[in-house]
Length: 176
Image (cartoon, rainbow, N blue to C red; front, side):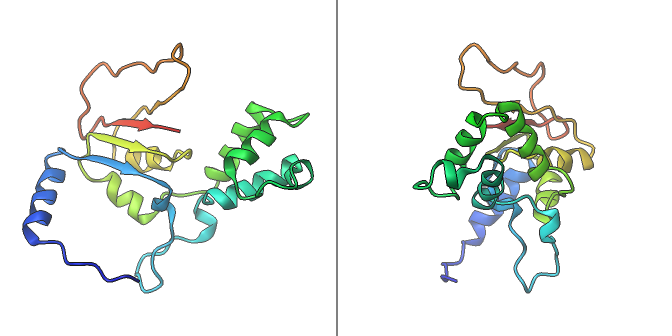
């Protein structure tokens, strides 16, 4: 572990104040599903965690015979494996989405870190995660959330929310 310089207490106080008033945007990536450190009192069993990108790619690759179809491409490349999955005879986009739901949501639980973050008064949250664990964590705190999802087709624009986001009705934007 690389030692880091301590963060000045004024900076931390300011950050805490901004979070308390909902003046921060929470941005989450896949690391929120990482296991806690071994010395932590928190647990997040592997069976409850969604797989990280490379592990997910390897699982999906089995279904589309990736290593035989594209022997020179890395089996851990989720983008390439997803393309293979979508274009394999007998599979396709719907089957890929179904497989993602199976691997990322079924039997999976939000991490302790995700549950804690969901309880904070963020009004806007942005995530790169495909799973719905953040939505579940927010709802466990009684928050109402309907995610907005990025779509690259300009004809498929997301509906703007009717009201401004609040800590009880946060805006959740999923960019993948």
